[in-house]
Length: 113
Length: 112
Image (cartoon, rainbow over the protein chains, first blue to last red):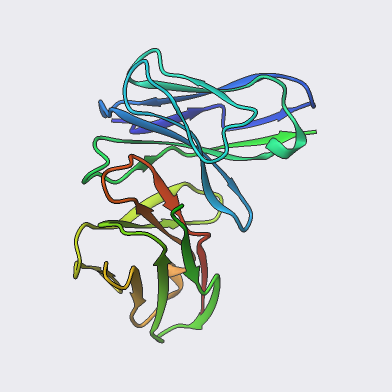
């Protein structure tokens, strides 16, 4: 049981390049989330999904897109990376928002030059 | 808009001492979560507090929730070096908003 996994763990991009971060969970959770963590800012929600085929905007969605084609996977895309998107990205999943805690992946450290 | 404030943001304490971290939030909520993050690592769930008056304890850590005061506390008893980490509280708006709002975290350093 791997829990929540993220690919890649590290990535360096040049401004304007695109990339996709992959999050996978094997706990059959309905809810999945993408956060970014910046020094002194805590975690901020980018996008989330309440089930396969659904997505919704979080607190800081600009510059990102997401897709949830399969229940176990949640993809985060950067179409044209900017230095302001340098951050650590965490994916999380939960079974139910009413009683369940969120389980976090190991994170992806992204640097945009 | 739900806002979550933690204080202090930085805490340096000696081993063996007691201290409390505070988490205030701005709108009604029945659910509050505490997480721990070690440097360079992911977040690990510590406590889930689901009702007014809830108290949970694990080792030297005890968390409580007062929904009327919109306040949760994380109390550290007889701190040890292994408790050095950043602690986050997170709040879910009443009604099952499906989203958590995190505080900025409290970086705890326990010195020998």
